[in-house]
Image (cartoon, rainbow, N blue to C red; front, side, top):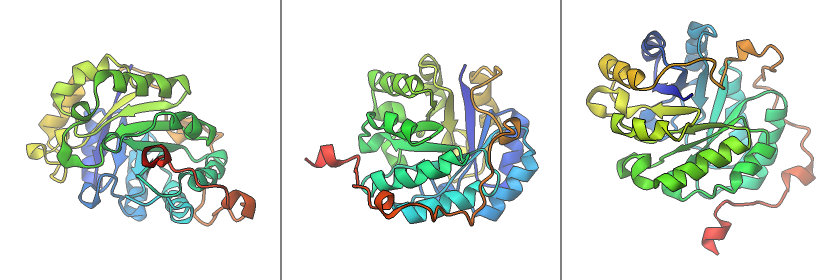
Length: 270
């Protein structure tokens, strides 16, 4: 079955999403970019308010793929107690070294979700590499929200391939990107683990506006709620480690940190 992820930007919206019965509460600051991050202290307050009743994910911001700032941002967000930390795999940057660094965090219990962007022509061959690096899931989203919805950028066979390859790797699979109510019936037939929404839940369908309770309820009604779903709260996984923000992997060898950069875009630029 497919769950519903609702992106919220403050505690009041998180409470509304929880009351409506969403399956994942996702924390972000839409006014700061496609994956804009909320302050860690605010994320911590929201996590405490949710009390383990629903999985909570959070973004780390629109950061370039450089190992040190990515690692520090992930550690800071993981320390809030969120269940999943979402990382945007933006075009360019040092994919190879960043994945080496993140694999150490994943091995310590941080549940990472990679966000690929449909408008950047992602290479799905990297899904297997994300699995090997210890990621818990992969999400397909859109970076430029002015270019339309995910379904307008990618055709059904491409979306099917993404879902199939992600689930074959045993990873959580999410679809998002300016999705509207009209997109839901067809996307449900692909059976991703969850569909993510922001703009469709807001007043006037503007992602930077406040959540509209009626729009939120309407989308929830279109996605049948069923349990158990494949994602869970950290509280339901007592063996999961909590990472503290001062645990930047100092033990990475120079050989690992100096690993050859493997840009996702080498193939395109060639």
